Length: 523
Image 1 (tube, one colour):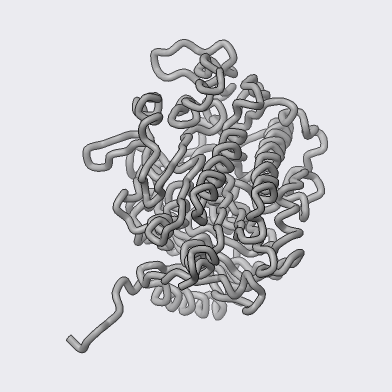
Image 2 (cartoon, rainbow, N blue to C red):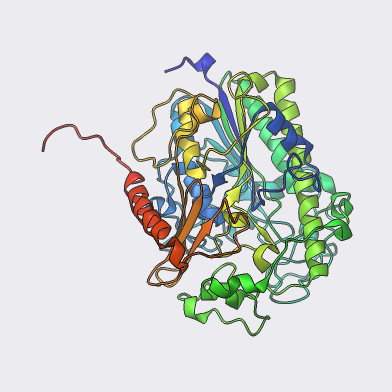
């Protein structure tokens, strides 16, 4: 085990619901100089995947190194148990200063005797509570949290207390009202159509830029890092940004940074859905006509199972705002990177940037997210920088998964990786000493107990998705058909490929079983 002074600092920076293409280094339509800097000074991985395309399960996998089916936070509206072993707890025990700053979303928006939650109203607005409570929580010795996206009503926690302390006493005026509250003076109008939750009729948020949660996340991340260094401790810090997750709304000058007329919409032909599962075709139907009741099992709904009808003009406006939100976040990430330079710790800090899952901006005729396992939703931006240890300016096709973060961080710090973790240690791949650490990725999605349950298995070339209790499925050749327009599931010529993928899928299921304890005797 490395001596404390020799251990690296580890900084995990995440966005929320960011399409893999929204990096300036690969997409000249968007400006992300800070992320481009990370790519130039480190390695870009072009085949990174989430273990689940929903916030809570994916984030819980980052902390536990386990898949949702094992750690228990299997969909939105469920929680990660507070007693779950986490990588943050292991770093705390090893003497690191550990912080979670920004979005957690490890617990539901409602509390219940069967599943209590700190991340719910009215607790969110109890600022006296949040001024007192800064951890420990999920192994982090210090947390500073915010639950909302944009001007959503579930704002509060440490972020709201920070706004007040900064002098914005009327912060409620900029956010959607809680039931019984009057609409704030600066609160944008409600969405123009009930099925377009993600929109705001005015994408320009009147909240002053300096009070935005991206500014807060960067400021508090640096403050906690500086405090750790002042105490002579290495740090394990998760800077968890909220954007560019909808609703599409951002302060100026970012709201007008991109011209909607310049936005190039993804190509889509509805005919590609003729060979896809029935829920895909339902998504193309207009609001009020689309019927997802065959997949509805609980009263809580399924994210993305709604009409995805949209017109090109509004989609271009959405895309321009989404890009602006991303560029604003990037500027704050730049502040953090500059802070590492100023503090003299950049060379001994492993920085990893990624997101929890992807996003649809008209790709395959879809918006936001849902149980539609295209690359746009499952694949992630993924950058690793560690000066002198990770090769600079390179890219890799080695498959990565968010479930690998916990064991890889432990490996980088010279700490033992527990057998309960299902991810693999990617450190040798990050450092260019091995071409790959895994040859497949698995993405789970169990939005309901039985009726909406699917899993996707991804290899270097192929991708197969199976649905619980159904005979239909998906099979794509990512080399010949990288945009996933031809579902080969029922193609007679690809039956041998499908059979081979089933066998490999089953083998991968065996490989990913955890081993919590070593065998120590015969009986």
